[in-house]
Length: 166
Image (tube, rainbow, N blue to C red; front, side, top):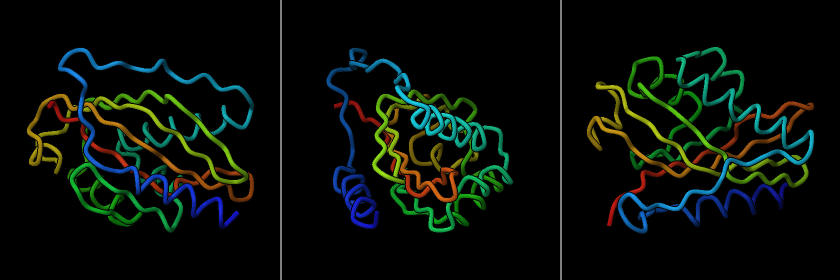
């Protein structure tokens, strides 16, 4: 399992970087992913719970879902720990008035699950994203990595980047 986890994390962080839309207003979108197994359905469910916890500022849920070693490669160009994430959501530095997520692909290898897709967010006025990108609708690409421990999926790593127009 350690080799699989190393491979998945390397893939997430090696492929990280700014995404460029192909042409304004004509970005091709993949359809939402449909689970093909109970394991994929469970992974998609925890991914939806993670999104809802952040959107609803549900700090206990964020902490419960997040693995102690969680690392987030944030769209504001910095790496956050689990503690950073909870603190920034608590303070409003991470806040979205709108936060929609569409998973486009799911992959499970042993006890490692990966969910990739797109997000649309409208950052809250006092958020770090609003300071960096302005308070406007942002399209993002995301990858969430989960680790199954004791039958439960825990959020281990995340990368999200804002899609910039050419």
